Length: 122
Image 1 (cartoon, one colour):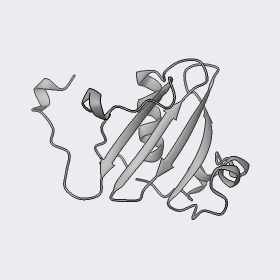
Image 2 (cartoon, helix red, strand yellow):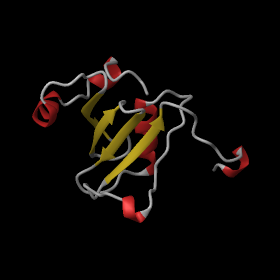
Image 3 (cartoon, rainbow, N blue to C red):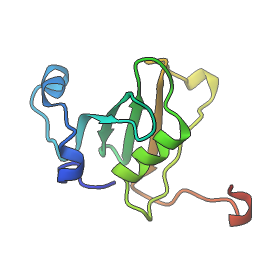
Image 4 (cartoon, rainbow, N blue to C red):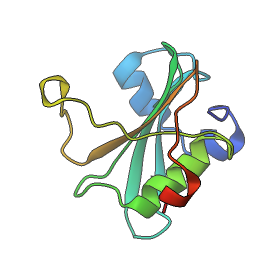
């Protein structure tokens, strides 16, 4: 994950929302951000963290799920070019939905995410 204090990311930080949610936090390990969609006239709300062995970025809007292009754009904003991240579909018994228009990106700190052969990736 990129440095959450880098000017390119930090300038989108919602400090008042962070204070309301968490009080004082270490802004290098997490935060709330609002970025304009690169495609549509809508804001993307992003919550990012890099603790507990995982990088995690949630992306939501107020009225619909983010598009593939928006997810890809946020991936490139918050992660380094060489990093592989995943959207994760857990078993139904483990699924928790606290926001109907939110999608997530994950990257483990340890190990690598396996990839299929390149010719299978479209």
